[in-house]
Image 1 (cartoon, helix red, strand yellow):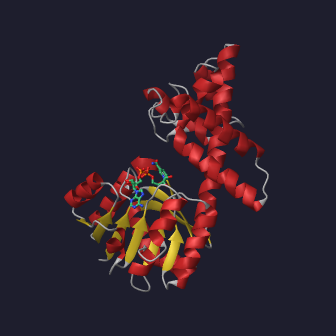
Image 2 (spheres, rainbow, N blue to C red; image 1 turned 180 degrees about the vertical axis):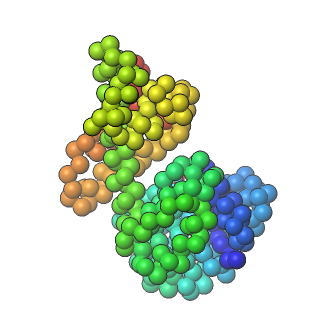
Length: 296
Ligand code: NAD
């Protein structure tokens, strides 16, 4: 079994780290939050009080941080993880961050003699707890192969999306499509209400017709048709609207740098910004139906 450093023990990172422990790895864990370090120690990790100590003398380092700026500041520089790790350490960054930062950090890892993959996830906290996450991985073949056994301890579907940054590219393209399709699904159900068409009838028809999509059949934004969807529990997240907004902003930023035209993605970002602006950012992203109905 290997030794692993784990940095970022939040909603996602803590259960992912516990799955590495369950798989028999020795884990050195760090988070800025003392409470997070204490619960990591209770779970069987060696909690350290300086980030660089988690990267010293380990085989693999996993990071699960809020955004690109955190990843950059933790990895780079004199007190950073790349400087502290022994040459040949495998770095797995599972945070959702911008493509440009992922590529920059990957280059810096190579200069320092380390293997690096960007490996953002889909599957949420439930998937992190059950070790059923999907990992979208960007990086050289050798780095992917070295990271894979550790990703398999935390997830079920591991896809090599290509070179550095392509894991992040896959994640933001997928989530942009999800944001757009959720808004479209909400509009269809809100229009049906105004037209006197029962939601269950619309579901029965559209879920078997050409309007069928995941936002409807697995995550229906009205209560009833899909009993497990957040609509049935007052839109308790789930996947918070604020997180969707973060991912849509990353898509808008990436499109601007790459010169891609994403009119619906940009509109979706604006609509989720409006939702967050009314104090609803903590609600599940399917809760945008309230705003689209004009009921908030
Ligand atoms: P979170 O806010 O719960 O956890 C982030 C953790 O990082 C916190 O415990 C914080 O204290 C710690 N942290 C911040 N800066 C740090 C630093 N410099 N050094 C050490 N620790 C630091 O967030 P989360 O929900 O666990 O999400 C983590 C990442 O996963 C984000 O990039 C998010 O976009 C992505 N993600 C989240 C979900 C989800 O459903 N929550 C789903 C997919 C992807």
